[in-house]
Image 1 (cartoon, rainbow, N blue to C red):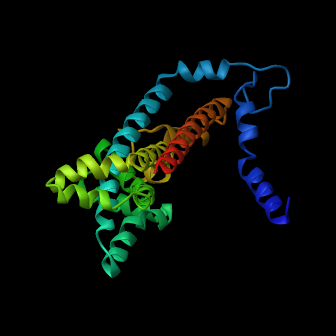
Image 2: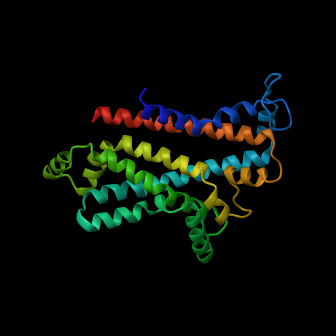
Length: 257
């Protein structure tokens, strides 16, 4: 290995190092955070799946993540298709606006959402939470779909229009099918963004909406129990599966193109 490759490997191991601690701790038989030195136990997994407050927050997170991913996918795909028709300063300005949530610090976004949602009457509501998560996820969809679109043949759309297909038929029958891998990848990443979001959620929710990451945040301040490691393990595994599936889909789409 070259020094550069070795540096990358060490950096990656440093970043994923906590995973090797969290997952074993979730199987500890003790009532406190510890490595399972005397055998593994599923008692904390049982405690999680029998606690209705955690089950309810998990269900809320899933519903919010699915709906926000749907909105972000539709809006981000439409934005990516529209940006492909533009050029020059106009395209650069619209692209910068679309990617703004991605480059804005999370705490700044949280404060902006809080002020805006309070004024709009969306604070501590499902609608406000779903919209906020969708806005945060749109940049990922724009980037992924735009990348997929750069590998498609633009002549296919021109051929469809020249053969008499309407604009809507062309988009539905030609453009969107050619972008399916990118759209699927954008949808999955949007789900992950919403599923893991905590900072903005803390600022825009109170009692009516309690997502899983927010409940973890509230709980860890009072009781650091192995149940937190269980939840973290579940979120890590689910996120890894989604990202792996999205990566495989993107690679298949690239090979087919």
